[in-house]
Image 1: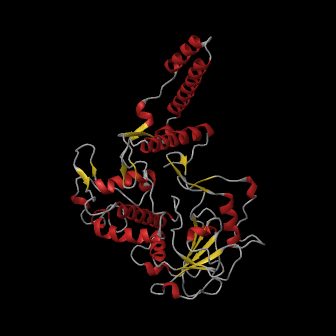
Image 2: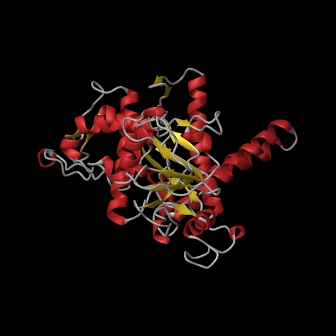
Image 3: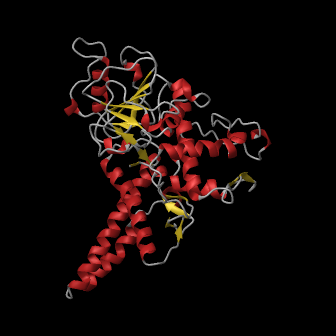
Length: 406
C-alpha cells in the first residue's frame, strides 16, 4: 500500500486495471466459466495485473498507458473498417500496425502472483462481533507463533522454518484481503525451500471464521501501531456495532450514522458535556447490555458489548480491555477513526489527532482549500475539539491500496 499517485493519468490507469479485471471476473462468472469459491467468483489465473510495481516505475507505467491507448485506437479503426467499405484495407492495415508500434511494458512490471481468492471482498464490514470472534481464534491458533502483539515473537516462533512475519506493521494493509483469506485457509510456503511457513487452517476454520480472524489481526495491528508510533499510520474505520438511539429509533447500527461526526465515549469516572458538533455514542459497560440507561449528554448507546473489545484492540489494549475506560474517540463523516483522548483529559489537544496527513505512508490525505485555514489549538475563539474538526475536514482520509483509492 502506498499513497495515491499525484498524476491524474496514473490514477486513471491503475483504477482502469482494477476495474477491468473485476468486470472480467464477474462476466466469466455470469457465463458459468469460473466457479464460486466461498460465495464469490474465483480468479482463474495464477497472476493478476497490479499497480504496486507501476507506482515505483513510472517508465513502465507510461509504456503501459501508451500501449493501452494504441490498442484502443486500433480497435476503433477496426470498427470503422467494418463500417466503411472504401477505406477498409488502409484502416485494417493501420489497426494491425499499431500493436506492433506499441511500447509494450515488461510483463514482470505489471503482474503479481494471484490466488483464487484475490478479488474476494470481506463480507464482515469490519464488524465488532467479527473482531471479537477473530480475537478468540487468534488466541487459539496464532498466538504461539505470532505472539500476543502480532510481532512474530511467540513461544514457537523460533522453531518455524521461516520466522513468522510482523503482523503489527503495514503488511495486512498491503495485501489484498482475498489473498489473506486464501493464505489463512490454505497456508503458505517459503519461496526458496518450499517448506511450509504457515499451516493451513481450512480443516479448522470456515471462510467466515477466516474473515473474522483477518478483522481481528487488522484491529490488533492498528493498536500496536498506535502504541509504537503514537499514530494510526494505516487508516482504521470505526467497527460496526448495534445501537440504541432514543431520539432516532430508525438508527440501529453505527453505520447508520455515517455522514456525521461521532464522539465515541467509553464510560469512565466523568462524562463529557454534550456538544452539537458531534453525535455522542457511549459504549455499554461489560454486563450492562441494552438495559443500561443513557448517560447525560449521550445521543446513542452501543448495545453490542463486542464494541468495547474491538475498540480496546484498536487502541492497543490487548491484555486489559478495562484500561480503555474513560477514553474518547472522534470519528469523521466518512467513518474513519481520527482522534483519541486519554481518560480524564480536560479538552482535546492537537496531539490527540492520531490519524493525520503528516504520516509518510498512510492515511494519504489531500488538503482542500475550500475548508479554509486550520485554526491552532488554543487559539482564542476556538476550543480543542473545534481545531480537531477543522483539521479533519481539511485533511480527509483517502484509503489507498495498490495505488487505487477505495
